[in-house]
Image 1 (spheres, rainbow, N blue to C red):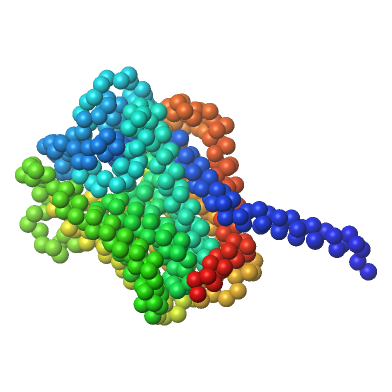
Image 2: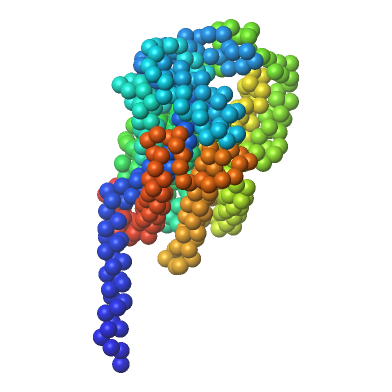
Length: 537
């Protein structure tokens, strides 16, 4: 006969588990955990990446400061020698001139092992207002206005640090909203796996530096996940979920000139997933309202691009014409070869940092690509034939649209497309693949889905830490140097204490693990969304 102790022990474990689920299932706690995790992880990248070391970051900072100071475009000047993109000059406090002049230093000197000495030129004393140039002058101003706000009252080195952290907070909020959208799905294990695979080290890195691509990618991830949630049950999707899609898609449309194309792709895929329910969904007033808002944002960007085209200069004769007499077919072939003729584009999507001078370990790229490939294969095996159509169309669009966009501008810019430009549509592939598996899979309460999410989260965290270590090593001892790292990185005056580095790393892992675990398994959090479903019926 079992003893009383045998009955008590399992109950204690069950009560403890229920306590944790009850604690973390509170919506505010879950949001706080996810936001804190993403914020700390991006802050790690910000700590090890000196200001100006991000791709195009000096030009992006000058543009953001100019818009924040009321100058939307700047003064057009002749292009720099052998530089195909038109340049605009903006009259700003002297520190932004210092930032702009750091570009060559970070590209050619910092990777050699000079401990990012380029950062010290930002500590110069205030020298009044000076002209700083940027090749982002005529780009859509929305992202730059939002990001550059801290530099208006603080045109100092501290203001640059605050600008980065403010940018990180916005991107963390977008990624937190993306994860929370999955709680609406009744089955979400593989969609969550697809989301984790979409968050490559490149995605997190660009969210930590000043670059419109980071906001574009994070807004696209939020829009993709929310579109999957709405597409799973369009008639009972809560108004807040539809509003989230409208806000993220609108912000996406306003980020860069090509961003409306990515928003359109997201909308087409969502409507295909709805099937016959799309007509009834469009009859909902909340859907009509946000559809108009997103359309207005996309049209506004198109009008801005027409009135202030980023790749057109008043002195057009100064711009090189690389393939002016080439046929459209040749331009398409060259653009295709540029993007898919080697694995470099894949490496850029997974892990490439700091002016394309620091590369993620090859093992990270191989594991990441392999995991996405397995998820795609499983999606084709699990999903029914007609339901695979959106995924097939998305893969075709992912390959074709970047090639067409590069071929359109290759006459002026030669081979210019980078992997980060494709990420807003590429991230939708693993998210959609995971969603289709969830849609047609059986019971997910077994141990296997839990192990798969745990394994994917480990891949995510280990890859992030490996890439952070690689970048920090380059700034400490150079590409080919050797010596101790993770001990002292004195170029960053606000976070030169190594314990803070470890504190942020441990905190990011803990917060993200608890937040993702809650979204994946908490029945209470799911029941809250189920109540919202019922209210919408």
